[in-house]
Length: 335
Ligand code: NAD
Ligand code: UDP
Image 1 (tube, rainbow, N blue to C red):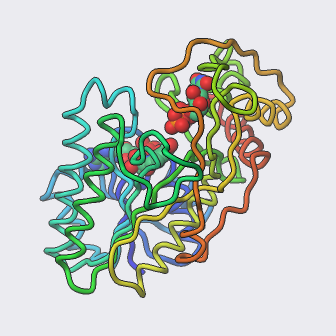
Image 2: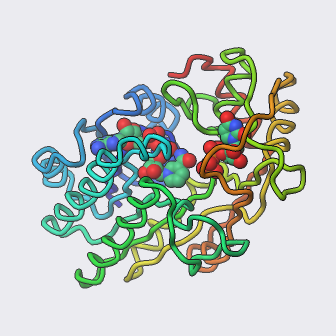
């Protein structure tokens, strides 16, 4: 299919584009490079030995995005573009509503105008807010606790309304849990700008000597060892989930929200141990106060993904640690 990928130069986007090229889809990436660089796609092309069309622009720029629709005539959109830092979203909520919500509105308007009826959207487990029960299934109440999560929730609702109004349309809202890891080649991976917010890139930078130690945000949670527990999902499995979602959307109608996780959880200390085993390096850490807004445990019920998409995570925590380390050691300063 002809797949227009917004935000395709970013972390999850680049891994997904690689998967789509390997599956012989035709891809146009539309990205403003606000949190990425064209180098990721240069490497994706090398790895896949295939071409990707690339257009630079903001998703809110209707003229530029519309030109890409007119030129490429996509049959489906995979929509990654947007801002994603929870902390920053509490400081700059309007930027988040503008880029994420207004950007998605512009995208849907152009899809309608150009007769494109299928979309796979990057949502997040943050739409659930505090877990009322575990594992979390898709019918859990949606009560996001920060502006970033609310943008994802609002976009989901907007896409649902859009889909209901467009006969023959199909929308798949993928609610990712905690994506980590890198392609096995070590050529592409997560390259955060500034100090990493997320656990795994932070650990990787400690291992490679860019930061002195890890701060563990709380060891007094009601979990196996007191540190936070999350459902980490390998980015290669996540990329495969997008391929499965595209295949599903090509032959289905309606709008479905689907969790993408493993159904298993790991604590911060377990992730540290996995990384030490993969890298052969000691990860110094300090226990500090809990981070505001963090929850003790999150784990996905991933049954719907298997039932609807025929998709199931395959890779382990050891794979996540090994591929992250391989990426980090080969690219100590990122791209
Ligand atoms: P990323 O920042 O690496 O990728 C996002 C890409 O979108 C970047 O290439 C960026 O330059 C581009 N972009 C941002 N705003 C844009 C705009 N207005 N117009 C055009 N391009 C724009 O992030 P990622 O980790 O790859 O995340 C991709 C998507 O998945 C995001 O929507 C994010 O909210 C969602 N998500 C990520 C995680 C995670 O932990 N990484 C978890 C759940 C959901
Ligand atoms: N965490 C930590 N130190 C860090 C970053 C994260 O201890 O520098 C913990 C965090 O408290 C949570 C887990 O690691 O328990 C995963 O956090 P991350 O920010 O990667 O993802 P989140 O689940 O918050 O989206």
